Each structure stands twice: as structure tokens, then as C-alpha cells.
Amino acid sequence: MARWAIVFALLGLLSVPFAQPPGKALEQHKGKAVPDVTFVDINSKAHKLSAYRGKVVLLNFWSVY
Image (cartoon, rainbow, N blue to C red; front, side):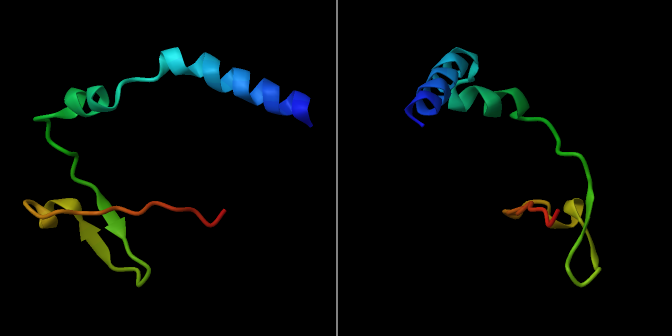
């Protein structure tokens, strides 16, 4: 069991140099338009993202598979 913990710890440490700084990912998309997509809610009603322009939108993605 301890051997697996060491393996996972080493894999985690090896992935650190490839991670982007937190602000860099946001800077790449700053000032660019978001694509207009359509989402369907649990009541099968369609919602276009463009209808919420200028408002704060929280998208919660999850899967049942």
C-alpha cells in the first residue's frame, strides 16, 4: 500500500512543471467572445447563452453515466 502512495506522489510531482499558472489560462481568453451555445434544462426547455448577455452565469456540468 505504501508503495502505491509513493508512486502516486511521484507522478503528482512530475506533473507540476507542466501545469499553467492560474492567471495564464484566463489571460488567453480575455477579450474574446464566448460561442453562442444552447443548453437544455431538466424540464427539456432550451436556453441560449446569448439571452444572458451581461449577466453572471454559473454552468454546472455533471454526468449521470
